[in-house]
Image: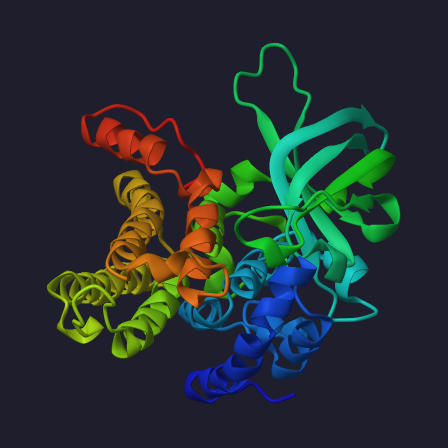
Amino acid sequence: MPIPTEAEFLQRVDGLLPALRARRDGTNENRRVDPDTIRDFHEAGIFRILQPKRWGGYEMHPSVFFETLIRISSACPSTGWVLGVVGVHQWQIALFPDEAQREVWGDDARTIASSSYMPVAKVQVVDGGYRVSGRWGFSSGSEHCQWALLGGFVPTAPDVRVPDMRTFLIPRSDYRLEDTWHTAGLEGTGSCDLVIDDCFVPEHRTHKFADGFRCKNPGNAVNDAPVYHLPFGQIFVRSVSTGAIGMLQGAIEQFQATIAERVSRADGQKGTEDPKAQLALANAICTLEEVKLVLFRNLSELMDAAEQGGGLSVERRVQFRYESARAVTKSKAAVDQMIEASGSGWFFRENPLQRFFRDIHAAGAHYANQVEKPGQNMGRVLSGQSTTDYFI
């Protein structure tokens, strides 16, 4: 399959949006992304954006991935969320040793993986690798995936002060899924629990968070394009925050349609003439432009540094981390303002606007989207102290 230009690819994405909107209610009712959507994503090359060329991927600039995520989230928030956390794994798997990449993609380059990075693995060091067991929650899109990326700490010697947090790459045959996903927001993500009673994970199927922080990963021996020299934390946090930007975009589109049809039963005022609605719409559109400008500026700066063979300062990286979370907070506030200006009709479940309201608040609950700690850490670093966050 030839690699499309950015414009050609985004045209493909736009062609998928009507079907995603049509499937949105069913996706939420069934609590998982429609299998037809996953098939459409494969056929359109959506999962190939960040995958290495040597495995049939497009190896594109990350801005293409995140623009795609915004557009798809605007049509169906749950589908966009799954794309964010599953699609980014093609990038992380490229950071693993070549042997692990061959195990995942050697027979089928369309293979995809879910994840849960919460570091709850019970890990025992054994010859050649580790014995792993545990239960992980929130593994979005897991029913559609053949592998999983799971978090845990490897035991270290008593005198080692820095913890060794890793991602363990595990095949579907070594874990089971338990359907615990009954939620008020992002209902269609199918974020099941993932359970391992006991399995062996060879050393080459682990990825050190420290390597991701230093941008020196085993996979760089075979995948040396600049996109694979980006900080792991910077790409991961955006995979769960950028969907909120798309949800804001979708909410704006729905709000405009709502006020265009609305006539107050109390005083006969048209929705488009309501000053409160006008202000909410203006604020939402300006917020959308602001968070998108910051997102794509940061991605360009990250890629420029990678292409030049250098890296960003810690001060810049902690700011980017904070700005990723702030995009969610700002987007939520803009959606909330539109909700308040839309009248009592938004309470009805069939009203599409409340879908975006519930989903963007669910997105905001993700640990990586909380603003307090990254904001405090940025202020700490700018005050001359060391960073306490290495997920940058």
